[in-house]
Image (cartoon, rainbow, N blue to C red; front, side, top):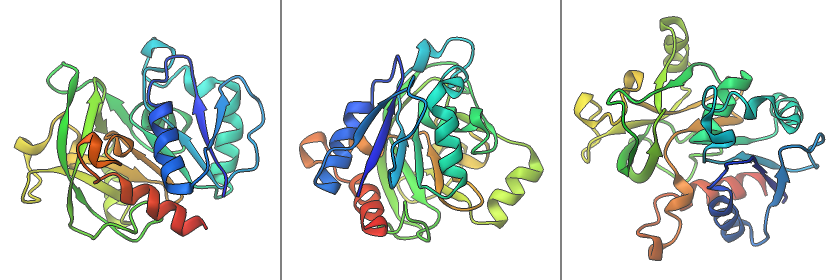
Length: 229
């Protein structure tokens, strides 16, 4: 199996992602610079977190126009599994691969802490090693993680089972007190219609080893490799 991690100026979670994928795959992913124009033949594409282009203009907006993203969009639309984490989620919305926008946090401050997430579906390649309704702990680190979309799109996300994760409390309850950034309907991660593209604000790659404080992120990568093997 081959995977690729896209690297932009300002990416800072690309190496964390490389470690997570290497641990699950047994081989290192390709690190693809944003100025490349052709994506290698891979089984998985990851757009990592960070502050691409310093978050100037609008988070993810400039990265979405990088040469490599034309190839990423083409392959994702053809069915290649594509994962966007934090800034990567922002980039995927800017390309149109995922609906909605990521706005400034409701509290107008950068947030860096562990949060509880409720797994809304286990019927995807990304969540197959979690249980539906399972509560996991995953770190967040963002200033623009406030997900918003129009009512019709929100209804589609719900009706089509495309909400992958919601912010919750330790018991799995999703209410305003458990929402760190103001995201509509406590949404932390969504899927495209085909189910091969996932964008999420929390960072599963930061919890893949007990020495890092936990293992709640590891099932995502192990499950992906299992699904794509």
